[in-house]
Length: 210
Image 1: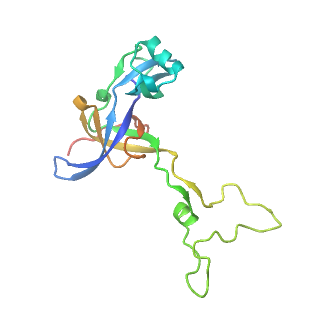
Image 2: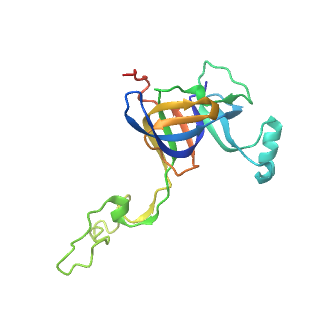
């Protein structure tokens, strides 16, 4: 089937493995995702049913033409060249199995405007002897040459709200009836944020049970 699936982060919880070890897991509502379009190298998937009254007319017309219930989250996912697909077909969480490794992409939580100590882990200025530059920027460079601040210099600014990918997360459990995917560890984003879950690129082997 497809290389990956779209989903929504529901939150974190814990469960116990067969050996009694406690695992911190992220619960993801993965699918079902409807195939909206089939392209040369990818599939256009739609996830999370949307109310038609909230759609623009072009969007509403697009779904009516396909005869598919409108979806909120639409992304293109790489496909397997050897498989055959049909528009309207659904991709579900049973695409994966417990023990598989996945890469998960999402948008990290926005932190707003932050200073350099929080954003870049500066150690700060002197704390005593009359210093008043505890958390300030300080010197940025020489004046005459180059006479400017180099691009990429670590400074205060907007933090978070960026696309982040966490690799090689192990699937602890799957609940096909409720479309749930339980993954060991944390994934980017806040609760109810959308995610893209795909098979891991660097770690494809399934671990054997101890």
